[in-house]
Amino acid sequence: MRRFLDITKALADESRVRALLALRGGELCVCQLIDLLGLAPSTVSKHMAILIQAGLILSRKDGRWHYCRLPGEEEAEPAVRAALDWLQAALGGCPVAKQDMKRLKEIRRKEKEEVSSCCYRN
Amino acid sequence: MRRFLDITKALADESRVRALLALRGGELCVCQLIDLLGLAPSTVSKHMAILIQAGLILSRKDGRWHYCRLPGEEEAEPAVRAALDWLQAALGGCPVAKQDMKRLKEIRRKEKEEVSSCCYRN
DNA sequence: CCTATAATTCGCCATCTAACGAATTATAAC
DNA sequence: GTTATAATTCGTTAGATGGCGAATTATAGG
Image (cartoon, rainbow over all chains, first blue to last red; front, side, top):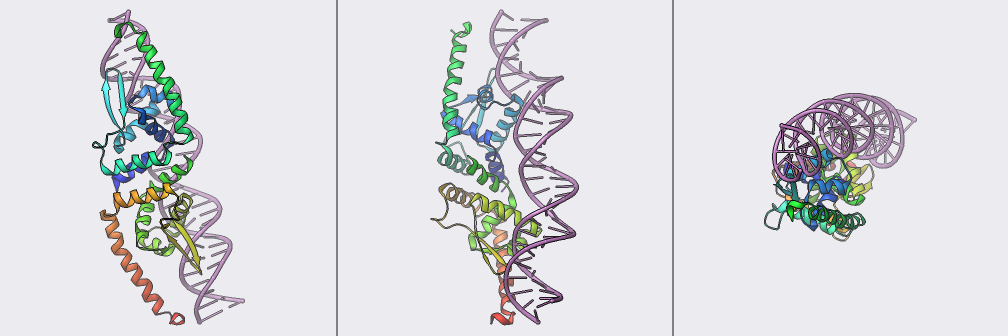
């Protein structure tokens, strides 16, 4: 029951739902989610902690960056897998999700430009 | 998105989840849910209003009684149907659900005894 | 009409939650 | 070492939420 409520509480916030939908396109670092959601870094950090706690996302650190991603088919416990499938079915094509996907393309492009202008990575 | 959040918020409370699980056994009136959950009538009334608002339960009035039930296959919108299926899969057999089912049998028996001792209904 | 029961609405209170900014930590670039 | 960036933790605040009891409404029974 506790685990189930962790998941439903995590899904009961629009910003967290948007983050989950955005991660369908692949992993993102916290700073990209800050950009997408338009919230303060501390706020997004807490949101991600809640999603991780619920098992809805996984994360890894790489240098200064903290990347988040959705769990693969085999990585998620059944209740989490079912929740993510339900989310996808219910909101996968909703206006907010589409708009965020568009914004994400810009955010990813920005990232590439910055990387290419960063001498040590070329 | 709004509809989806209505559902997730409704599912993000243990008492409401217990009520939904209890209704798998058939419709119940509010006073039976008050008995099962051990909460004040006003509190249960508000919980039921939230579940109805989310589309997770349907209700009907019969005399002094207000009966609640789960929607049938055809009655629920897809997002609601999926949510209820997920709930059943995740918590259908959990300890709390089992214990409540046991309590429910007593509550239903009590109801029958009262009805049979009520002259005008025989 | 009066009483009892089922249920809701209202007002109140304690707690939780989402948001922010400031301070802190960790890593990378210079 | 110093500076800059990514991210987290902490403290605070405004607003939402869950709980209760009192008052109210609706219906059934005497």
